[in-house]
Length: 228
Image: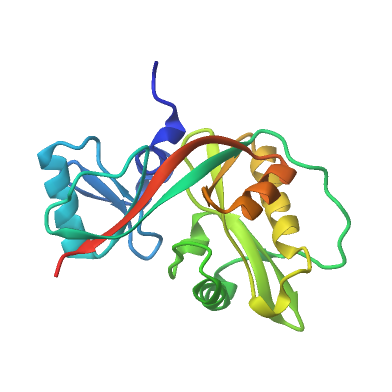
């Protein structure tokens, strides 16, 4: 049975529509560090592992999203490893009325977006992560308090990501409504939407299911850095 493109989303992304964001070293590949830490190899051969180790030592930590954790990568050490549930949406829940606006976010909002992501830790977020796709947010008294957007774009799919809410403004339904809107935008373009959740985060998985996402498979998110 042939592999599905989402089985190795980073490899598919950096060899597809977002290839312009890739840094290559031999057979290994990674996203430019100011956009993200994602990296991949064509296989687990010694040459591929060595090339990825070189990239880590030269450009900093990387994150791999694969069906299984990688073998030891020369010159690196594992920072974290987590099982995630990959979920896909081909339809989305109907929109519901809310009392807040969800304006688009862009370069003018970049500092606030990075600050919010740094505070809430929705996943890897760097100075240009917001340029990976469309982002929208919620402001209260001028302050950015919630956002959601897009990240990886393997052919035919777009990942919904960066969903976060300031701790002082949780419980207002911002995350669900923002993610619903991002998902609808992805589907309207003709892509299917996907996302990743920690497999043990049943609350988040339940929210995603209510919006139309369904579990596809488990993947392993492994972050490695230079040893020493």
